[in-house]
Length: 110
Image (cartoon, rainbow, N blue to C red; front, side):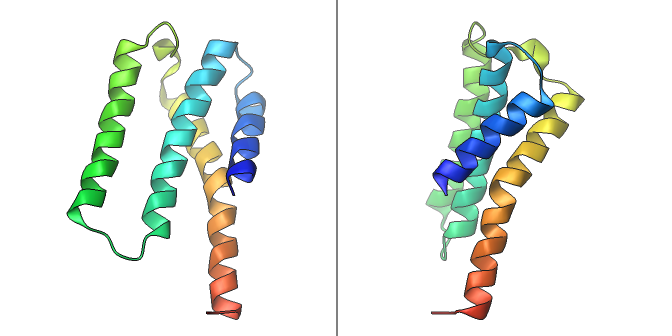
């Protein structure tokens, strides 16, 4: 799952954003964070307050890294098109895995 998601994130980042290395770091880092948050929410059977707190803290740390790591993360890149393309990358890296998991549970339940 991780190999698939990493490959899709990188390939779509290069395809949707024809940009410099700093831009690719910003794009892939953002898509990876959101893909992992979605993975956690769709993998767990029991959610607790601690899980929601950890996910919230993940987003806070991501936002803090955008603020404090400006030499690594290109903040000027973040606009509507950036958000749209990161959403597309996240959907294509996370969605097929979830569809496959749903199909497996539907047609071959435990």
